Amino acid sequence: MTGAAPGPVPLSGPRFATEPAQLYREMRRDHGPVAPVLLDGDVPAWLVLGYRELHQVTGDPVLFSRDSELWNQWPAIPADWPLLPMIGHRQPSILYTVGERHTRRAAMISHALEAVDPFELRAHAETFADELIDRFCGTGATDIIAEYAMLLPVRVLARVYGFSDEQGPGLVTAMNDMIDGRERALAGQQHLAGSMMRLIADKHEKPGLDVASYMIETQLTEDGSDFTDEEIAQDLMVMMAAGHQPTADWIGNSLRLMLTDDRFAASLFGGRNSVAEAMNEVLWEDTPTQNVAGRWASRDTRLGGRHINAGDLLLLGLAAANADPQIRTDGSALTGGNSAHFAFGHGEHRCPFPAQEVAEVIARTGIEVLLDRLPDLDLAVPAGDLTRRPSPWLRGLTDLPVRFTPTPTSAFGDPR
Image 1 (cartoon, rainbow, N blue to C red):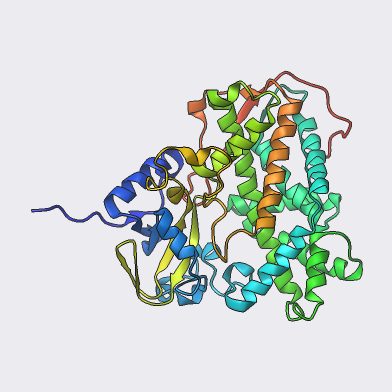
Image 2: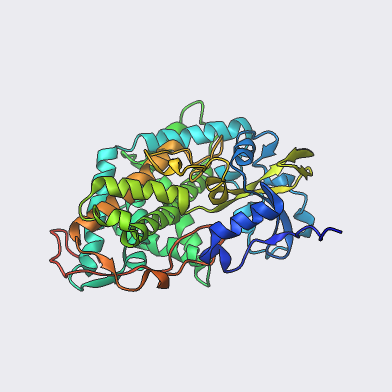
């Protein structure tokens, strides 16, 4: 007599923060490369754990669609379901646009981001990194997450979007209020949405060398003439949200690795290669975006030995796929700058390559400037005391307390 098959796994709980790799191994052992899971309110879905299976799902946008209207669970979803903002019912952003319109919309975003000068981008990141470090460099101690990583990406993105530097702090507050998901989340979202619409109106009047102006430039051509200001504003919001939290976590997770792993200790002080190596390892082993919702089966099919019904929701298990033992037999994925990870997704709906490059410049510059300015940076608590946000979606530290020898401020002064 055999035991009952393991039931669906709740996609919640502390293990996603404390031991996700072990949890994914157990799910793969019990369920194979495609595991049944339960979202908030016991809503069923599938989590794609296998590297090959995830490649199949993300590479076939017809069978595994981004159209959330296909979901067979909509009749059971309450109006206050907490994951609605993530799933996207009738949302106008590019995340849930499909087909030819998605292709043109993605091209508009890529065109705008490709126009960002990489040398200017790095200069912007250096400027804001120096200004933020000036706030705490004389104290000898700080929390890198709250006082640095969670502030830097938005400031840089705001400048390349075309916002004035005076608007930057308000956008930082709005974005972090949205991430906190507490009582100020709605106010943060409203501030961000209003700011984007005002930015677009300003750039119609006075275009510049910035992302918003480049998107409007596409909008005014024959190919983009049916894109509305509201759609551009939505896409700017999506890009800022997607570029802020994961990049902040990329900075935090990479610094945690460099401060806790002996392999990086010898080259920590000014070692440029060690920064790149740590950042690449994080994308494989500790990727900021762990799981993504989602794809919907457009018809009945089979995947990883499972029968998938039309309208079923599939979640992309990026972190689990990165650790799939079928592709990680010798650890070589971590060497030589191997970028075959799923940290940025894959296929038609992946993070656009220019957006990946922007995130990498911001993160790497932020880390390098910090280590240059504070060369004896060290953890202020035992490594085992560091905690993670209890989220199955984004993986990042709640704080990263550090100490260092107090140093003078730079020439930029305090940006407050």
